[in-house]
Every structure is written in structure tokens, then in C-alpha cells.
Length: 343
Image (cartoon, rainbow, N blue to C red; front, side, top):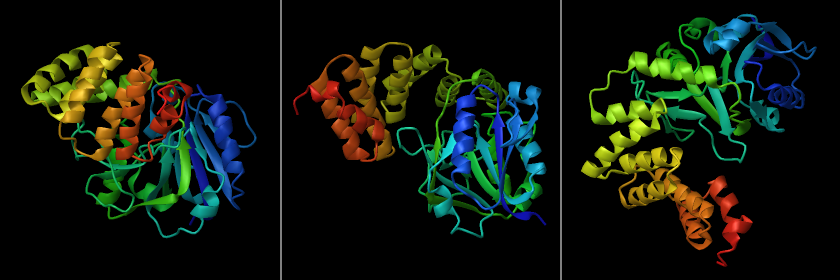
């Protein structure tokens, strides 16, 4: 039997020491009665943490090996799996300690601007090219999973299932774990009153991107034009993906085809073409208000960059009508540049 308490299990590649410091401070500020911080990867000596260096794993994005290594040496009965660019809200423990009786759980995850980040979602099982979709916190779905930047579980659950060490970062490592946890008879929960921020820090992601491309290439056998376009988009071959989506959009003019073509053009540095296709996306049937809001937000951002403040403000207002909690749209709408529209 493990002692009551929390073992914070952090993986790090050593590229973000300032983020690690912010994480450690945010944990200490919770004043949790019994806890430890276990660090695996590349980090300095620090009396506040129990760190064992595993450079090879850190340098090859072997996140599952690092997670299992940390969890195996945990002394407490609750294990929290963490990336090194996460911080806890000041009232996280105050809100979290009222919850009990979970197997595997998540919390509300936010980005640095306060928008909901990918904390709880679903994906088609067994399809490496499938696009994840955010779920309502109370929803249940056979393909539901909790993102690996923050996972909280009973130690016994981890001990029964464990992460698949053949998978590296962005190789459905968190998806596979959650699905096997559910298949083993355990449950997934989310506690949205307890909040963490995922800072999505891009430093040190080169090996992660290679692992992602490797996984897609190894597991995908695209049979349709849609699947081939999705694969190219996932591996960030924007020029090739744009050609595929251009052909699809010319044939069907569906929302996703127009939106993805616009996104590719934006990444390729073609804002005029991107604007045209985002506008076509807004005229198509979107799968959800949030998706339509995303198209209007991109339109507003591009127009702002072009100095067309009035039209940009209108696009941003449409974004907020469809998704009132879109923090980035509100921020841009209230910026001095958008304010020049006079409306």
C-alpha cells in the first residue's frame, strides 16, 4: 500500500529551465500536506525535487519510458503525470482535494491566454490520422482520452496498465494509455473546477516532431484523397497538403477542405489566398460553432495584419458570437489596432 499523498511525476528535456522553476513554485504554493516532485530527463540538481537524469530518453522523446520510470519510484498513492511547461492555478489544491474516488482523471487545461487547451477529447480508435475533438467535461465516449501534459491517477491504475514504452511523444502515447485503462475496467473523469495551464512552450520540440512524423508514416496507409491530405497536413508538408486540399475543395467545397487549404496557405506565407479560402469555409456547413469561429478568427487576424481594422473587428465580433470564451479574439478586438475601426 502506498502512503496517502501526491507524487508529481515530471518529464523534461532540459530545454525549459524557467518553466520547470515556475512549475515547482506553483506546486509548492499549493501547501499540499504530503507530496513529492519526481523528475526524469535532463535537469540540474535541486533539493526541492528527486531527479534522476536519463539523457538518452530525454533526447529521443521517450516520454513513456520516463513516465513509467517516475511512477515506479513514487511513494504516494496518487500519481500526476506532467510535462515541464505546466503550472497549477493558486487554488488548484483547494478545489481538487474535495474530489475522491477516481481512477484516471484530468483537470481543466488552459493555454496562457485562458482558452481551453486540449485537456479532454475523443478520437477514432485505431486511426493515427483521425482528428481529435474536444468533449464536454461530463461527456463519455468510447474514444475519450486525457492529454498527457496532465494526467492524474491512482498508483494502482498505473501499475495495472503502464505506458507503452515503444511509443515516443506524439505517437498516440496518451491515447493508447487511456484506451487501455478503460479497456481494463477503470474510469476516466475530469474535474473542471481544478485548473492547470499548459504553456505550450516550443523549445526542444525538434525530436518530438520527428517522432510524430515517424509514427504517421509507419502507421498510415492512406486509401483516399482525404486521408492523404490529412497525413500531409499532420507532417507539416504544407505545400503538398495545399495541393491535395485545393483539389478536394474544388470538388466538394466542404468546410474542412476549405479551412485546411486556408491554413496551409497561411503557413506558406500566402495571406491573400488564405483569406479567400477562410471566407469560403465560413460559407460552408461547419461541423460545430467552434470550427466556424476558428475560420472567422483567422480572417480577423489576417485583416488586422493587412491594416483593415474595420473588417477585422467585424470578423472578430463574429468569432465571439460563435464562441464567447475565445480569449484571443477578445484580446485582438480590444487591441489599439482593431480599435481604430471606430466601432
